[in-house]
Image (cartoon, rainbow, N blue to C red; front, top):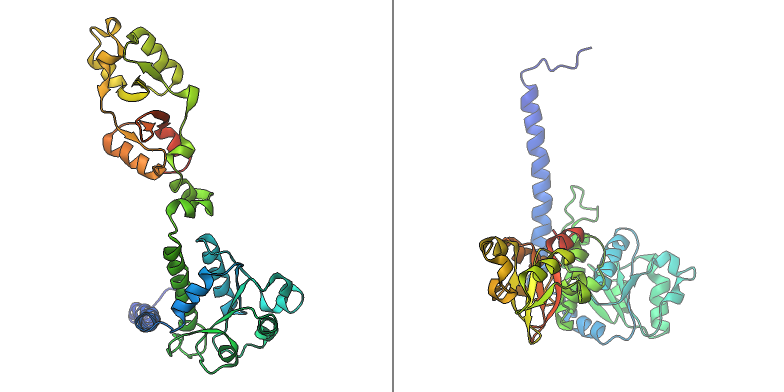
Length: 333
């Protein structure tokens, strides 16, 4: 039996199916985008009080839920933890079998249930009531059991699920995830959370490399190719060769006053061996501070078409040197 289309209408059917598929995707995104816009225009009334509650907490934010709400809860807890708000996820079913011991009176519980009637949350909810643990609920049902029992209520706006049967968690989970992001970012801004703070929790991979500072990657101490103005060029060349960076840094009264590069050597080849470092050096070299992000240092190197940067402190004293290869090996690019 041949599988080759024999009807001229086959391509049209394929095109029509493709159009239907795209229409389904666009409908889902439109429904969810409208719900997000609705929530953005009318945030839950307890949003700001919840931020203040978390900021004043001595313990951690315990997030719990089950099913799709549990998956979203894990992401919210992970986002909190990585942005300066200590948090972890406790599976509500496991909580009923001993994991309630992870929840202390110093903590805050964030419980998620779209219906607000999730039976698996009953034990952890009862635990918060017994030990007076502040509880925040996220649900789309303001009159549900969970919302009535909670101290703070983050009610999702009334919006249809984006699936064709109106039952699969789609819009509701997107709203919950976005609300968690809004909480995390608001907390970051209130704490004054900086890129260097972010790197503390993200030391690995490309993100960690891009958030590294020059101070963490630079060479220092005996590795620095330092010479004085009066250093004769034969000795200066020995320093440049032995240190292996292709430059010499000219220092006067513990301040960087110039840099000698390969280009400076070529431009002064005729009288090179009869001169001093001060005669050859290019004044006002490009430098960076120790707290400069490595990614920013790489951008400076690329823009200036140089491969080495001297690192100086606020008094212009040389404290390090960084080569483009150091940045590339660290995964900054």
